[in-house]
Image (cartoon, helix red, strand yellow):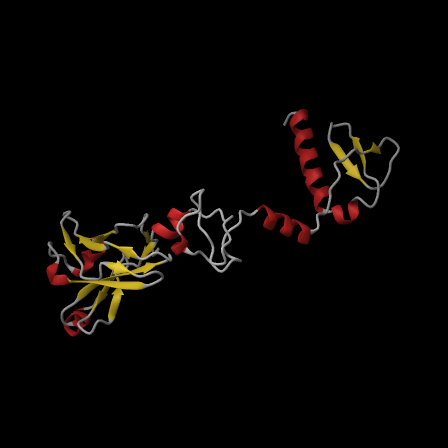
Length: 234
């Protein structure tokens, strides 16, 4: 390793150590010297050829003050004003108006009052009693005994509305590996912060699939006033 590289590595490691021990290290003077191999050393003990090191000051910030500073820099919203009042319409700058009349919120009216946010569950398989047999993913398995006891099985997708805006024009289609789709039965609207279920009997799939290939099914959710529909992870 070249001398310059050794110097850089040594200085960096030394500075990290000094910053880590700043609670007591900066109570005393720090001394530095370079040995015959060009390596830089630091110590709180003075020696004949050592000089006082000029190190940057490490300040300890008051955490309460820092938290208040962060709060102060956070854009105003309706959290402390009773929530969003969509019935008042949009403010002149396109933002929302809060329930207590506060009009300086930075929340966009479009995202808070016009656009619903849906989250979809994973595809589930139900028996004829509408009890869940299992989640359809790459690990899905079903025994012959379960098949015989299940009766007429169906697929289930659950949608949750995570917004204060009612979702309308909702449709859910299950897609088979050959690209064909079948629509699941369910409501066209999902009320604000509500949940809706969509069902499709297996026999209505446009492509017959063995149970071990059900994991290849996919589904699409459409909504007139929704953004991207999020899915619950595996």
